[in-house]
Image (spheres, helix red, strand yellow):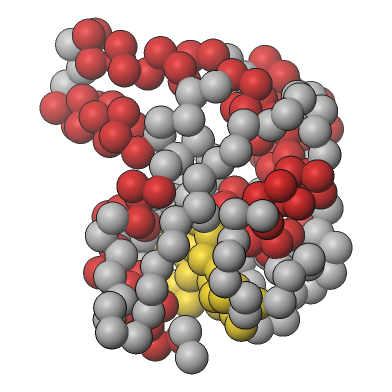
Length: 210
């Protein structure tokens, strides 16, 4: 399950032995309404999973989603990447956003116009980031974006998950490593390391998938 607003393209460099594993990619459903509950959304997403006792892998908000899916279906293992397992791992600034409701000021609709960012004469580094966003962040629906941001900030874990593998980057700017417990740390890994550190992540997944 990809991260917030991302497509399954973010997994394009993740490789596992094809004679042992079959990969299936989930995509974001659009919420039925801005106030659709996360539980109801999870029930709809569950219908897309056809294999029982699967290994669920989720990135960022997708990591939250697979933990919720594991509450209503049998899974062999959960692997989360650049994500969180509980409320203690949420940084203070996101808690402040929730408490002040400042997230409502987030201009979600600008995400739908991100393909225009290249027109502003950015330097090479910013242009590269813009091109990466255009490639991987293709869920631009404003209602979805507002729904997703709300549910990241208001997530209430139902229980501590068992049989979970947490892979996290030491340079994650969204969920800083100082708040993360019991994870496999990738040095220099940012919140986008599913793309930039795919080879290392693939190896860790293979070593921990049994």
